[in-house]
Image 1: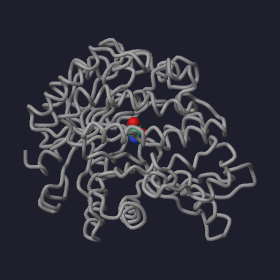
Image 2: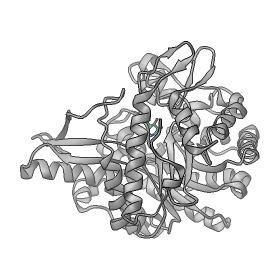
Image 3: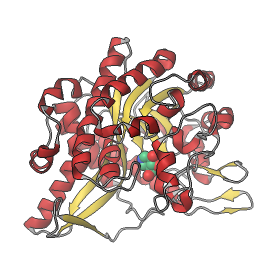
Image 4: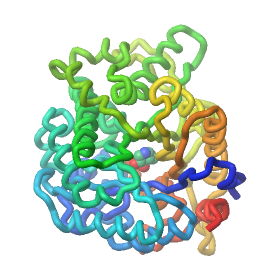
Length: 440
Ligand code: IFM
């Protein structure tokens, strides 16, 4: 069971669960266009068994029952994302069926008393825009602004909150430098441009939404606590560099209008011309910031080319992803983010959870490890609040087992088990634990 009580958190603290469009909806339905993840998955070697999001959890048809699970679980909010390729199949032309879907989804949330918390972009870039250079092309800021206006013109009036981008580091670095996510590039210049353009697109989207009179606008930053493998100055520097390009770069751009010096030193030559002129847009004021937190990384130096370090395996218990369970990092990030970047601006934990090798026995999934993980991390949130950090909500990742990107359907993050053959949903022990805690 969860050891916390709702009353252990401040009055009005919001508990929710998060998902994303491509990971659950079923992209073959409703006139959605081809997304870069369809292309990435169809390229042998990128995704386990070349699995894609064509069917996923078929949330497109099962959304009423899925929202019932949130309501019955006692959750207050649902963090969902809007697929750009569903709303604008070629990135520029509107698909009315796509807008209708998010309209129905929004009303269905409200009917159940759930706060709709939208994320505009959770990685399904239309292939037609990827063809035009995707995140490497500066024009993406305007394209994203247009998408923002189209989708928020339809559902913006009913949103509790809106985030622009989910996990800037993944959009830029994981996908253009490490090549692990679509579009699968390994190119330092493409990376630098994507890093800057994703922030420019974020700022443009915020400006467009302000122009529409929308409020409670934010963005979602993923963070991984960086620790040196030993006390040597080289290892300390390796961890600091990782911290800069992973954790600090995007939130620093958005909240301070600057980039960390170490990153500019290495990547500045690859940034677009006059990149400094964009900070007026990039650092448009935000109403809240989201922190996605899962684990830490331990860094050791090497003598290779930039970023001249590598991660080493740590001693702590690991999740099915091989990620160490390190709850203190969540507390420390919340404290540091408020102290150094966001001040009094409300913070949300917009994702936190674990993949587990769940098994079903007699229709029951006893995911005690996940309950332990939630207990420890909710404790970290309480610790941060006790230190005065204005944390306003916590979103568990994820409501459903889903498409874990390059790892296909193998890694189960859900509080609800999904049978990917029958699409049957079975709440796990962790869902029941939340239900008990939230007093549904
Ligand atoms: O599944 C992802 C999600 O799309 C973004 N944040 C991390 C999760 C787990 O890897």
